Image (cartoon, rainbow, N blue to C red; front, side, top):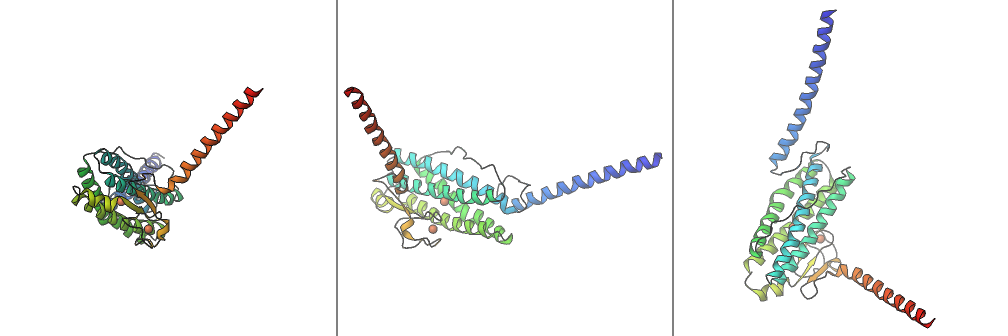
Length: 265
Ligand SMILES: [Fe+2]
Ligand SMILES: [Fe+2]
């Protein structure tokens, strides 16, 4: 009887130990795979596939990049680099679109908590351009390259397509920033080349001229959003401004009408 009790307790302990070891092993397996790609990602054990964790990391990265570029644009403006601010704003919207697309896939996989932007560190415009260039270069040469390989291996076609487009768009962004950095003292060159830029609403490619079709995703050039230093507001926002103006005008007319009616009584 006593032996039976000891054997039962030993069996329970053995089962618990085996279960705990299995859990530990799966955690290590995911950590290793993440480390081999050189990417800092939260270890989200709930994801069946590594692409889930990669999507989470990319949403975080793109959200941070969008916030940083908006802060860099404000800084560039205060330093008098209006064309540089213009490029930063267009690229910020491209990164925000990447984050939205990646988040949509992640949401369809069941994720509910979207990462939020971390506070960016802002330096001089020259420093900010260098930071941006290095970030973009890392994204297209390391991060998205690894994510794309993994998504392809895991047969997640939707994530692979988004990663491929983002990777190619980041390469264009990196080229733009390098060019601006090399010509920062040439105001005429910057105004001429980056005073008007065009963002692909589909993939986030940022061009200095409106192309007939997007060189990254093939979208029609007409759909590109224009950003320029004469008119800082992107054309896409014009509709909202017109709507607000219409509401204000209608409100003024209505108030005037009521006041006139009251007086005439
Ligand atoms: Fe980018
Ligand atoms: Fe595109």
